[in-house]
Image (cartoon, rainbow, N blue to C red):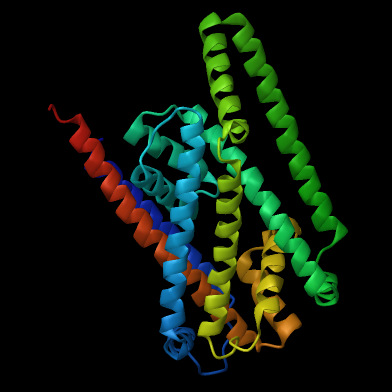
Length: 337
């Protein structure tokens, strides 16, 4: 398959997945009898303050630029010199892939960087896992602050969630099955590498590269700069949400505490087992806006849909552009000099 065909195939998958996400989100929008869902969404979009949405787009780009620079200095500590441009492009490709394959972007951004700078994937993936651990700690701090500021509301909201022991039990059984299967695969792999020296040396090489990337934070000469970048990234994420809240008349008066509440609700959406396999952002955020802040359900769903849609458009635009730049750079590097 030619490189052009591969890029075209990637776009088809991304577009199909985006359409599916939009359709699933739109199903939750309930409007009055005789009203059209698209007309209501268009009306909500028209009433939004575009200045705040554009500012959100700028903050979005800046946050990812800082994240790319943070990744660059981590790789630099491992003796891997990469440019900021290649780091940023690979990061945005990763976010684009995440739209299609949840968490698949973590691997794809490493592979994209390998195509640009030939840095082994096992090393870069180790640094990505390390970054995710740091991000998880930052998120935990924000959630903790959210529960301090909005504790009673958030605990009352959790009590309203349709969580049953049966749903939790079924999810536990599924996790046990997955864990058992994973353990069996590890046993088989362990047996194979003991029998095959080439496979054993490859496994050791991959593990050493991954371990080096994972422990790269301890090799940083400017650890304070890494911590500073991490704090700024999450402050910008917070400001992005605040910009969107200010953009819509229905939510513009909610204030900073509401943004903290939405951060906590987003985390709950990832952790709470809900019946029917639901539990996504589009399910819990509208419920939170209704329950915690008295926003009418239709406006809450429309707000969530447009908020997510605007972010998705930004991801698709920057990711698709990064894919195009990657293909151009790789093709140029393959040409004889």
